[in-house]
Length: 113
Ligand code: FES
Image: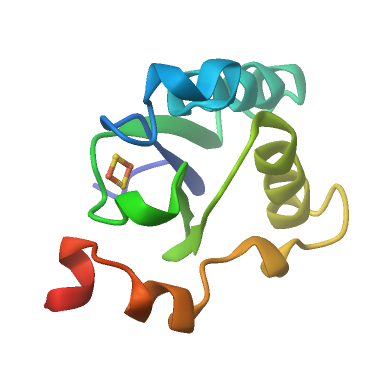
């Protein structure tokens, strides 16, 4: 079968994106914010907002992946703006995507592959 959901927002709640030092701007709160917003928008049957553990991009978090694109240094508000842009509710926020230069300069395990 084909998985019935059309879109996936993968919010990292790993140890660094979810570090309690980030207060309410950490992964689990970003996830809760987006999940609640998605439900309010009536998109729960079509769009999943999921948690994931570490994406090997810890230097740049909090991170979220949508359609293979990485959005970094997120807060709850910025994640909402990403969601709005991806879903057509507002302007796209491609400026919040992790740049290739920053990715390459980081020490994340993903860059070493
Ligand atoms: S904890 Fe989020 S990328 Fe590692």
